[in-house]
Amino acid sequence: MPKLNWAKNHGHARVLESTTMIVQDGKTGVINAYSDIPYQIATDKGQSTGFKPVGIASKITPVILGERSDSISLDVNFKIDALLNISAAGPMTSTNSIETAIVVRSGQSAAIGGLIKSRANTAYNNPDNVPRNPIISLYASKEFQRNQSQFVVFLTPIIKSSASAGSEKIKKKFQLRD
Image (cartoon, helix red, strand yellow):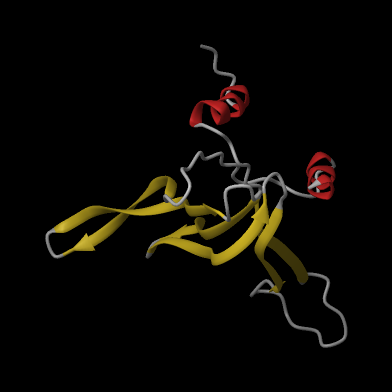
C-alpha cells in the first residue's frame, strides 16, 4: 500500500471510506453507512417526499485456515451507492459493488477488485440569433470535459487473540481515550 499512500499524499488519489472491523473467526461482520437523499414525488394527492439511500455497505466473513496458520479465507461483499445528480425526476445514483472470496495472510494487503470509468463529453454553444458562417464563426464555443474515476477495494486482515487486543487500533484511529 505504499504506492496508494504516495498517490493520496500527492493529491492523485482519495480514500473514500476507511473501515476497521473486528470479527470473530467464522462469523459475519457488517458495516453500513448510508445517508438518505430527499426528493419530491408528484402523486394524485399532491406532493410527497421520497428518500434515496446513498453510502457504503460492507459484509466480511473471515475463516482462519488452521490453528497455526496465518492465512485467512475471506468472503467479501462491498457496495457503494453514490449520488451523481439531482433532477426533477429524482436523484441519479451510481452503484459499484464487489463480491468475492480470497485468501490473504495476516497483516498483508490485497486489492480485491476495481473498476475504472472514463467519460468524455463535447458540448457546442452557438447563439441562436447569430448568422451561421461556414468558414468562420466568432460567436461559437466548444467545451470539452473528460472524467475518469477508479473504484478499488483493499483489505488488510490481521489475526488478533481477542477483541480487546484489536480495539487499541480503533481507539487510536478515532482518538478515543479510556
